[in-house]
Length: 164
Picture 1 (cartoon, rainbow, N blue to C red):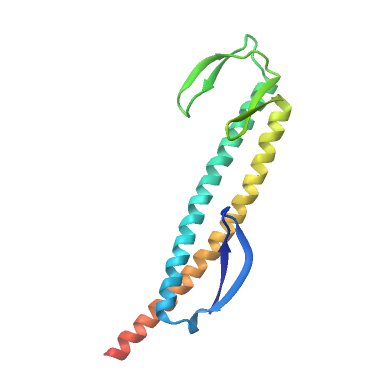
Picture 2 (picture 1 turned 180 degrees about the vertical axis):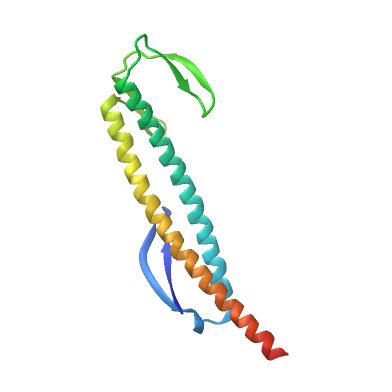
């Protein structure tokens, strides 16, 4: 049985360099080491997937809030500002047509509400595409891990039978 090994880059995205390995020809010790490496990659990809899902959720929430602001606005400018998922503070909206957008690393840009919505949706599209890629890679790694575990188990069973 052959599996594909993909190399991780520093940014957490997988490159498509595939290296096919016939696991039936790999020595058991190396197969065990390979299993450990793939387990670490699965764990890293799972964490990356979780982080991407959280980021996607936040951008969806932001876009939803901006749509509500654009569609309804506020008659008196009073709003509740979310500090956490369950804690809100009262606030005063000066201009419902302008928003401050956090573009990362502590930088904020003033944008019109439609432009802010567009920004959130574009970021969400990028995150979703990376999430799909990470989940696809996670499936490949999990399949490889299952194949290695089956091979190791078969070798252990064979060794147990020959030692009896």
